[in-house]
Image 1 (cartoon, helix red, strand yellow):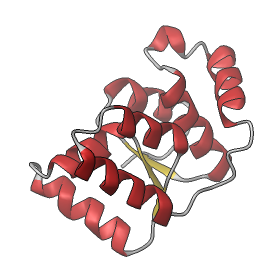
Image 2: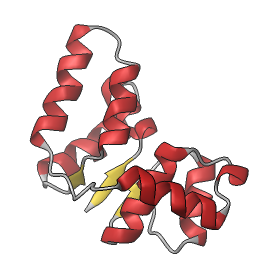
Image 3: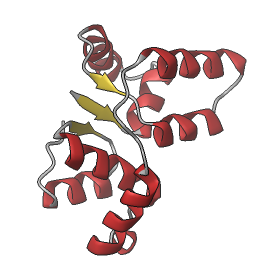
Length: 126
């Protein structure tokens, strides 16, 4: 299973990078994508019109989710313990990292800071 960060979803929704579109489509088709509410909240915050909002909500409603109870609190603690803020990692990215650590899932991101920290925490990245 894999967690896409916001940057991958944005590239997919824009549809300009065929490589990302094809890979995301393959992961979606194979039911290998997990949705996280902080990522989808961020996507909705920047939605470009009602069609994109509908598309984002459709993905949110149809993708599997893992247990997010206290996710942001646990992500905050992870950030505190590893001083992630000083490494350019905000709370949404910390929630992605925490979720990947908790589940063993892979992360796919275009964010260099997120990828670097993920590697140091032993998280697989795409």
